[in-house]
Image (cartoon, rainbow, N blue to C red):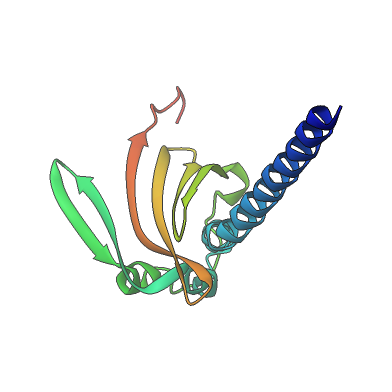
Length: 151
């Protein structure tokens, strides 16, 4: 009987630890979502302040354009949002966080920006710096959409 009681107690402790880890992982995932959601909000509103909240002070956008490797600093990227207004076709644009993966103080986020003429897949690298998650690099793929008849 004592063996079953000990086994039951050990299983209960194990389940509690596992449950705590799941709750902690979910809490961390919510914290990683904050800069990713600020990034999405920046696109939605055209307000560069959201991008400043999302990105670390140093970092780069890394992408291919016409077969060539290209980079831009976050500062250059944010400066392109100078008018602070949503895009004219904002009502037709969709954006979402596709996935988040966390390992300690490093994380990745995959974001989809589905616009009328192009679909972007963004891969964000994030680090937890001074207790706060920030995007430190972004690479993306732009997939042009075929124009529909009459456009």
